[in-house]
Amino acid sequence: MSQTSFDIQQAAVIGAGTMGRGIVMCLANAGVTVQWVDTNPQMLEQALATVAETYAHNVRQGRIDQAEADARLSRVSAAADYAAIRNADLVIEAVYENLELKQKIFRELDGLLKPQALLASNTSALDIDAIAAATKRPEQVLGLHFFSPAHIMKLLEIVRGAQTSPAALDAALVLGKRMGKVSVVSGNCHGFIGNRMLHPYVLEARKMLLEGAYPQQVDAALQGFGFAMGPFRMYDVVGIDLEWRARELAGQGQDAPEVQVDNRLCEMGRFGQKSGNGYYHYEPGSRQAEHDPEVDALVLRVSEGLGFQRREIGPEEILERCLLALVNEGAKILQEGIAESAHDIDLVYLNGYGFPADKGGPMAWADQQGLADIHQRLLALETRQGDQWKPARLMGELAAQGKGFADR
Ligand code: NAD
Image (cartoon, rainbow, N blue to C red; front, side, top):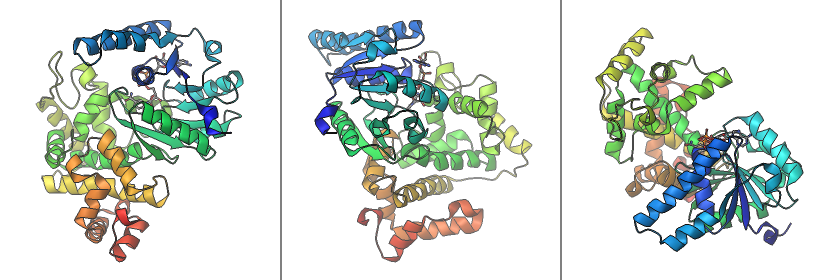
């Protein structure tokens, strides 16, 4: 199949929730016409109104003129059902994070769409190959992982399945460029590049709450390093309840000690910014995270209840554990070929996760420190705290040759 067969003029988006709204605007802003489907007509109506309001706001701010707003809005239309989008060149699915649901949608679309159409999922972590397997065109299935809010965040992870064709990837890269995104190609693994690395980073932050730290201390240390937001402020923005519900649905992970503070917060209805309370308190209409002594008391109760002997944890230890967890997972991702280069990993963290720009990204930061030094520090943590700190093989090899990640 030649690359020109994937010329994307008309797209469809499935799902009119948080992500669908941003994705539709990215497409319309780039001159692509978009048909929009949601099983909930009210949701779709609300979403169309939100898009119109966003463009009107952009006009009031002087960012675009009225003619441009009208042109963008005219590219977006509601579609009654899947049959109505059968001529789309590309469909981007952004429904609930549920593999069976996504497979069902892909199967149905595969039967309806023209043979050369591309099918993409905005999943945050699910297996792209398992989604592609529901179709008879796995070479035309890929992940297009936008970040929230999708029309504002620069990063686009393009997820390459085992069978995704080079031409399909090229078409996604061209589209990414048209949308003004920083596109990074990722291999298929749980969480892709960004969310996979986030997992051990957040795990360390959560463990330190149980061992003696408080959310505000952890966030302050990482913000002091230059992160736009510490992990707990980030969870308040994303919604603490998303993972809580996902654990509940999957029927696993809910008993892990590290998630007990999250669980208690969610049981109290403290989901984050959207509910006015999470790890922090928010005054009505404000996004200002305010320290909440009730949360400290909860952290203390949970950690003592689990039998932890709390101890003072300083900012150096917080930085050491969170940053090295991030770098070591990045090294594994590079070693496995999930990322094509250390620079790509840095692009993901700079553009999607608020890593301080002046430090160049986690892998560049590790190179600046000296990989041999980072390797030693990981070995020291491994001795003190166990196997989870075992340095990635690649890191040991590069360190032994006096090289950095960038030399690979
Ligand atoms: P959401 O809950 O805000 O919206 C999902 C929408 O899908 C709802 O409007 C629902 O009515 C609709 N829907 C459900 N089943 C449908 C079907 N069969 N056909 C058509 N529409 C259907 O969800 P979201 O936060 O926008 O997340 C969507 C996807 O994007 C998920 O896979 C999520 O993991 C991923 N994602 C989310 C974020 C985020 O920050 N929210 C970031 C990146 C990726």
